[in-house]
Structure formats: C-alpha cells, structure tokens
Image (tube, rainbow, N blue to C red; front, side, top):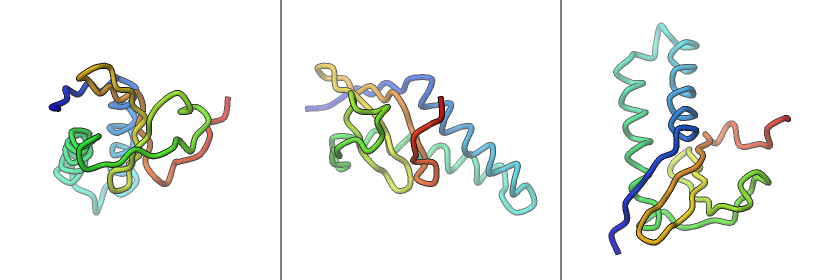
Length: 101
C-alpha cells in the first residue's frame, strides 16, 4: 500500500536544528551545501518508513505511544493513520536520551 507522509513541525525543527548546529560548530569545514544535502537526505529517508525501514520498539519513554524506526543515524517516532504515516519527532543517534523536564 502506498503511504502519504506528513512530517510534524517538531520533527522538521529537530533535523534543521541539528544540522544548523553542526554548520555553526564546524563552519570552516562544513559547507552550507553539506548542510542542505544532509537535511534533504534525512527528509528523504522519511519516505522509506514502513517500506525498507523496519519498526522498532521505542527506546525512549517519551515515544512509548509511537512506532519508531531508524534511518542511518536518525530515529523517527511516528504513527500510522490509515494510508498516512505521521512523523511526530526525530532524533539524531548522538542525542538519543531522555530529555530533561
């Protein structure tokens, strides 16, 4: 079954923010083109959810009501609503820990 994909603003912000921070930290060696390519690649990987990216049991408590999957170094929390996959959150592997309240 072909799915439609919706990425919630929180997930998009996490991806953009991560790569903006990398660009800031490594501004002499990480080009803006690299940042854009990394963001595009990560966003594209969302379209592989439930196709080639297998479901995983959520490892974060805050994601317990979602399905989880991993694409390269990114984890995604998502739900399936009929023919639509809704990505609620994204987290880079190096940040996979419970957030402080």
